[in-house]
Structures are given as structure tokens and as C-alpha cells.
Image (tube, rainbow, N blue to C red; front, side):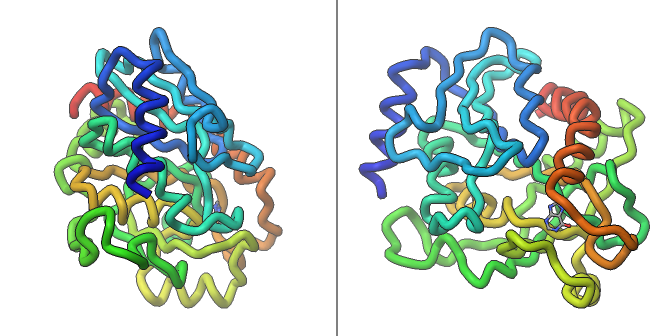
Length: 268
Ligand code: HPA
């Protein structure tokens, strides 16, 4: 694994003459935020050795480098999910690469279903904690990439969450905060599963982010994660859930999220 990461990092460094300070991983339908980047350098995932390639519609599959509000950023437009059939080591490979590129702050966005009745589609939610229901963990296996028993008691940086809240306030943007439950998917949940998730304390549900956060914490990166509530979870509204709806609502929230990210990055 170390050698594979080194090969990917070297291939990226050959094409870059800057050192990124901030990493962004963009979720379903939220990739357009790369338009914020000035003088960007783009590298397709398929041109980076050992890099997993996303197979999901709504995920572009490239790494974009450049300045956002004067800060050098590395942006993953598109991510890899466990449900695509990759093992978790492959899913988190890009996080190890971002770490080796020198990134200390990682911002992750995703699309999720709202469980908390106060939420509505289009809302943005800071993740304050998560519940890992993948039945798997990217740290399972040999202890070759750093510590194995990673502390997750403050996985989502309180400091970055405060910055996000004050950034949202200054823009007059409503921002929710809550617990994100991660399931494998790719089927959406049943109404009974959503009732269970509500009972155990989840405010939103999705199929990503948690593996990346575990590895970011293993690497000592600070994490901020923002979820776009693209739909109310199964059984809350009477209509069926669809990936098309998820992408459409994410697209509508993209502009608001981009404004917020810009303001957050300025303040980090
Ligand atoms: N469930 C799981 N993942 C999701 C959802 C959902 O309702 N919406 C967007 N991603």
C-alpha cells in the first residue's frame, strides 16, 4: 500500500509546482464547486497510478489543483463508494494520497437523506458525529499505515465546525448540524430502517464519507464534513427515492454550498 501511494503521489507531484493546504472531496452532484478554482491544473483519476476510478453518474473523476480565496486546494471531483465493489482500502486510497501531498485540513461534502423531521430537502448540515453501519472499517488489516486504534471522539473538528457556523452566519445561510449514519447502499433504506436510525440518534443517512474520515483521523488531519440533504429519507414523504432526484437537488444547492465553502476556506 505504501509503495502504491508513493507512486500516485510522485505522479501528481511531477505535474504540480504547488503544495496544497486544503483538501476537498466532493459528493454526488456537488462537483461543480471546482468552478471556484483559479488557474486550475486537472488530473484525471485514471491518469494517477493505482487511483480508483468512480463509476457513478454525478461523479466526474478528477483531481483539480488551484487557488480558492488565495488558498491552495486539492479538490477531488468525484469519489469512490464501497457499494461500487471496491474494498475499503481502495475507497480511502485518495485520502492517504492527499495526506502525503501535505494536506492538514480536509473538507468533505456528500448528499444524504434527512431523518430529522426539522430538515427539508436542500438544507445543508454540518456533520458533528457519525454512526458507522458499513459492517466494515478501512483500518481492518495489517497495521502498516499508522496507528490502528484511532480515537474518534472528536472526529469532526470542533474548531472547523465553529468556523463553518460563523461563515454561514456571515452569509445569512441556514446551516443544520447533526449525526450522519453511513450504510453500504446502494439500495436506499426501508422505512423500518429509517425508524431504527432515528431511534439510535441519526439525523441524516448516506453511503459515503465515514471511511475517508476514519483514515483522515488516522493521518491526523482535521476534518470538516457538510452534507446536502437532497431528500427526506424513506417513509418520511410518500414518494419514492431516486438517484435522479438526489442529483437534481444537490445541483440546486451547489451554489449555496460553493458560497459557504469559499467563506470557510477564507477563514481557515
Ligand atoms: N439514503 C442514503 N443515501 C442517500 C440518500 C438516502 O436517502 N440520499 C442521498 N444519499
